Amino acid sequence: TQLLEQSPQFLSIQEGENLTVYCNSSSVFSSLQWYRQEPGEGPVLLVTVVTGGEVKKLKRLTFQFGDARKDSSLHITAAQPGDTGLYLCAGVPGFKTIFGAGTRLFVKA
Amino acid sequence: ETGVTQTPRHLVMGMTNKKSLKCEQHLGHNAMYWYKQSAKKPLELMFVYSLEERVENNSVPSRFSPECPNSSHLFLHLHTLQPEDSALYLCASSPISSGYYNEQFFGPGTRLTVL
Image (cartoon, each protein chain N blue to C red):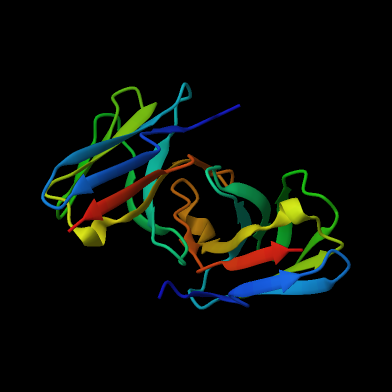
């Protein structure tokens, strides 16, 4: 059974701080996605990483896919209150996308 | 606005009621999904439709019945639900051509409470 474990489960930080959240699995994925879900809304895709060791940047967000394609990390620089939400990682391919339980981030002004 | 709409946004129903959830996508996608999201649990894939045919049914109880009349619409018919079925039900769509990536676009969800 493929499982994605995300850590930490919950993170509360002050505005301006940096943070990293992790997504780990014992399985190899052909690609991995990160989504952000805000209260009362559905998840919104942030990025897809495909190649082992790949690094993608989206403004203050940096995503990295592990060399062995079993894990990924999301680093946020100078967090802002607008970054508050549930961050989900998802392993693909195929229709059976596997989701982690998420990291709930709260950024205090 | 992701191009995927869901109605109703909130639903409270008794265990003997029958109700339906509706999902509509305006993205020209040809795969649609139902997920269940419970607190502190990973999203659970319930059903997948590809080109209006069901391709995945993850051992979901028969009290949940999906319907996909065309590639833009997806329904989830509910009857004799249990309180533990209370959750956020999310609809998603994706283009089949993305296959390898399977990037999904989610609706806002229906918050279901079963009394």
